[in-house]
Amino acid sequence: MKSETLSFFDKVFEVARLVPHGRVTSYGAIAKYLGATRSARMVGYALNGSDGKDVPAHRVVNRKGLLTGKHHFDGTNLMQQLLESEGIKVKDNQIQDFRNVFWDPSKEL
Image (cartoon, rainbow, N blue to C red; front, side, top):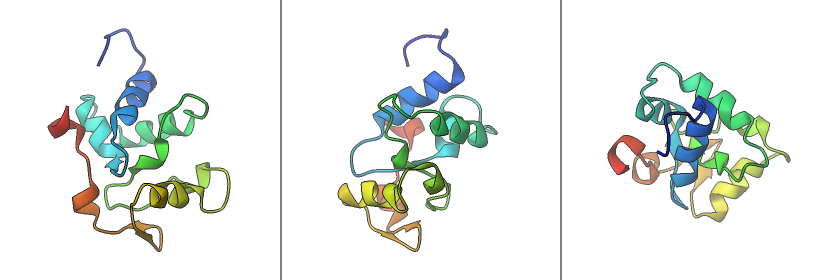
């Protein structure tokens, strides 16, 4: 992370940009990494406002691997299509093999 002067939303964007291609993380994992364990919903709000900021928000899902933020993407299945284009399998709005594709910023950064 760069600076203490960044807003919470900017910190969320920085972490989301670090999620590797073909991997996913959760709103709660980002919140925990940022020291705001109970702020998963705020992470979601931040990502909802990330349009145009070059943030791969499609790589952030809920703690069970569900595509709960998909309605914030243009197009009916855009979030799923973006994930599948990175090799992530999605069935019924659920990441398949979630444990193996999960990226935990607290462990990786």
